[in-house]
Length: 427
Ligand code: SPV
Ligand code: MG
Image (cartoon, rainbow, N blue to C red; front, side):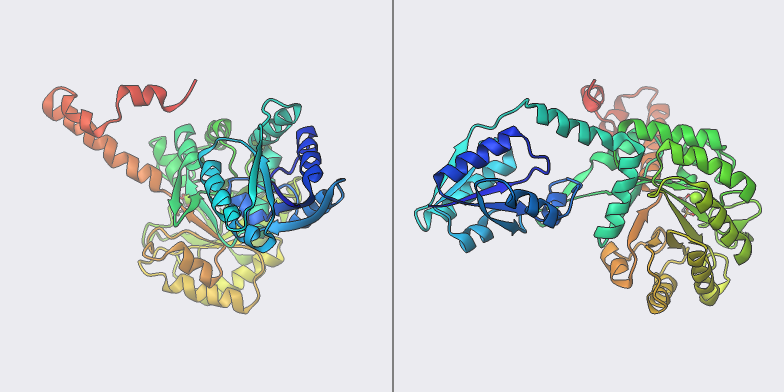
């Protein structure tokens, strides 16, 4: 008898061993191990490589063979292995219910059989797994996540968050695109949105402590990596001190921009801002890298040459210098309607062999898709201000409706129900 068992867990506990023993008693056992890509599609951040997991299962008594399974469904591997028996836990989630039917249909083609064993909940190992997922709240785990994504994903998709509620939207929003779950990989704490949400202009006016407060609020209710908009980073002497509390707060990466003087938002056309010298900004990166302790904390250098009209050549020269200074990533920014100048920079970046991740913020040139940016070599796409910008008009409209009608009835259709708001965040 050929027996097939797919193991999803990366933490092996007693119930798994019992299951493997049971399967091995039935016949020659092949264990299927999900690829990391499949684990990711199921919302997991793999903690070890596929080959490590294969090696672990190969060494367990009773396992004759280990194969990789590169899809969440079993169909491809079943047709390849043609097992007489598939064994699995009788977990009743919707996804697994769907899978169950497909497994039975495919097995029926050669008279194979599905054997389901009771799914054991509440094991000590469940507690261990829960503890590991809880660690997403901890700084090092978040940082490792961002690093893992940067190394393993073609695209890291980031959205702006400026408080606990928008953090929850970034954390939980997921859509189905052609049968694949799609969600954001992390959050951008934008200076524009953090300032605007506090009713202040985006001119480095919101002080360090207030920025930390926003970070903590978001940290409290999310587990995804946070990329902080660090504005210009300020004076080098201040930057190295502020980095300590930023790093300790749990931020995964900070992006600093090479502007100097009173900072204005980059989307203001002809703001008359000055760009820092290459030497000074490179020194800021160098000192920043020295001041940080965590191996996974990233300092990303943001180049404003295109924003300030200083041209592509200057942008490329700066990218090279900032990489030499130890930057962990390069962000190229543009406030043009068309993506052409960003594309031109990307082409140069690829040509000179820029290896560290390239970041883009397509706010004004948002006809471009994430896929097109990735094709040009961009690895991180930040949707930098959209939760705040969409919330403001909705709130304003509601306020106007209440004023207009002298009551709130007419605003009801624009609002979620009291029941919904009361249950939005479980106790
Ligand atoms: C921000 O979101 O604050 C940014 C990006 O710095 S931009 O507004 O485009 O300058
Ligand atoms: Mg900003």
